[in-house]
Length: 83
Image (cartoon, rainbow, N blue to C red):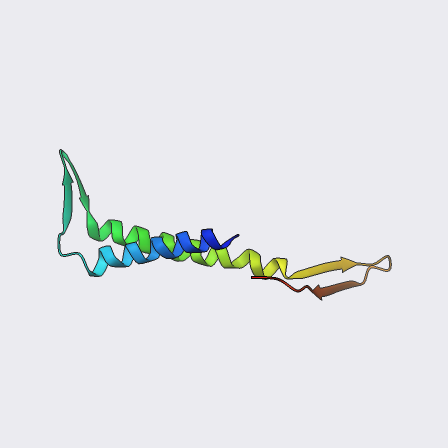
């Protein structure tokens, strides 16, 4: 993907960790709706970690080119990538 996607994943991960470990309140009430901050922190932490891993996978696969010649031999070529 791109750097902004990785940055968004990192921000989501950090926000989740802040909600898990640095916030003293247990829940946030918005009228009749209540949000448990611990559960929200775990959701953001897991989703941020998954997004961060997913943002790194395409960079690795785009760095290699596979080619099959007429005889059926496969060759893998590493390309220069700019990160």
